[in-house]
Image (cartoon, rainbow, N blue to C red; front, top):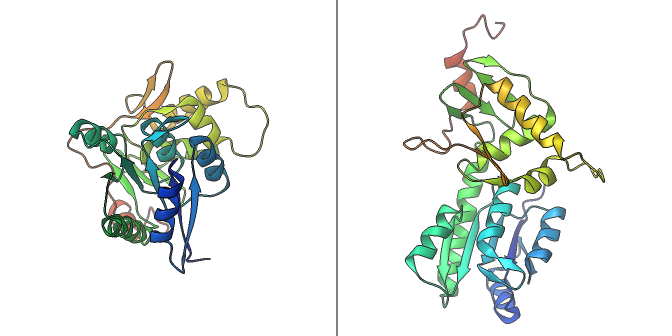
Length: 253
């Protein structure tokens, strides 16, 4: 497995994009640039970067809207770039899921430090590969593909697992139907019935008794409802979780 780190810069100013690439490139770090959202989408279909630097104002779309698509595709961090330093825009960007926000003009040294901070956090999170997403009646370990409701295992199909992970890892965010369809049915099928997503959502709701958690946003998509006062994710050691949640009899010992 390669330790190479890959960054994606989505910036329509060619000179700025090239300057950022030179400033951030290292021996173990690859850089790809996209001048338009369309180009960035194509890159994301082929690979998942470790971090994205995303300009808010792009020729073929709004960076805030594209941010939602990006976050639905993976847990990689996103740093927004913008010439607008209004507090409302900064707040909107962070609430939309951005991990950091930098206004132009900016110091390359500051940007480099913020990029390194986000990559370090991602690396730290990667060491918790067997962590558990724990909330109320639910315990999900996506890496082990093990799911519990009230301490009892729940069998989920492959597509149900994909849907659950997308919803939970983007808790509180509205994920569009087309984004979910594209991310769940990735086997190259030319045609997928639009009803397939609705059926998968219904089955997931029924199996997890999650009617109040998986919310339908009519005409748009779905989201996992976020509860104020609870962290987005609670991570605990999987082995410790098993020991505390199940007795020796339940574990077959």
